[in-house]
Length: 408
Image (cartoon, rainbow, N blue to C red):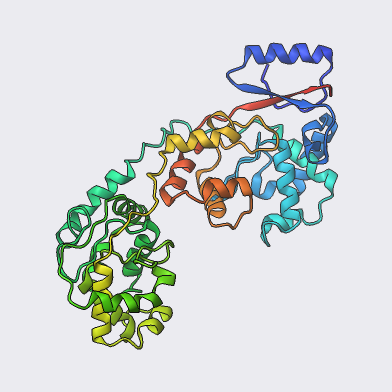
């Protein structure tokens, strides 16, 4: 007997049969208990055989062109929906119909579907055998520790920026203790040409997004210290002028915003050169250009001397979670290895890797709205998204039998 997803109300004899089937094939399926009184968004869980059959006819007319009658996404970006959790499918159809995903082929396909058609087609696809990872597909190799990867990549930076990111070369910035978001955005600016510097452009041209993130994390976790370089200028005069900069860079040059760099302890010659670049427009930033427009050479030297003499502080950055640690968190809602037993929460096991990555990115950027997913995904990096998508796409998907129990 092949165990399938069952949503029908189970009578006493069927309870025994279901229990025997689960005992015999527990490695292939899971059981989940649901109350016998359905709410509107749980209607698909309680669909009976005739309603599932009607859902099949709806699928043939509205869904099969993209999802197939078997619910297995055959093209990039089209998710596997066979064996997906029924209430989740029904709820997603409602979101698409209401315009919650914007204008796209899915929203157009379901625009005129009646509510009963949506819950029936959700029940049909939920009743199918779920997709499985491609035969012979090996688990995703573990990604190297990002801090160690960043340390290895930093070897090419040490000659100019110091072994631990504290510069000993005038005119070259210290990197230790910079916020990783600011650091990464700066490297991307050199790579894209938005910041003009031939040496830096050559250094970063071969770096991908993950490598840049690793470097940024490594330097953010290094202990900052004052640059080991001289500072010409009058620091006391610079302190008075620095009051105009405190709103963005902090009273003593310790920024509280990832968008604005900390200046405390930075090399004075580099700071002066940066202010001159903003003033003459070779660095494009309207806000900074306005702030430095009235500064003469002496004022710039004084500001640089003040900030160079301040004590830098490390940003509040924690080492990121490993993929295994992220999986542990995701499994709390999505079930062991991505096999959800909650009819309202999607299964992730054996889902298309490209689809998982795209949806995680959408949550990470706020394009998809969910308070729970926003809290989880906001701190994901590009590598985390890639690793999680690869992991769950390789997990064995398991069917679910929903055992209906009488209300208390």
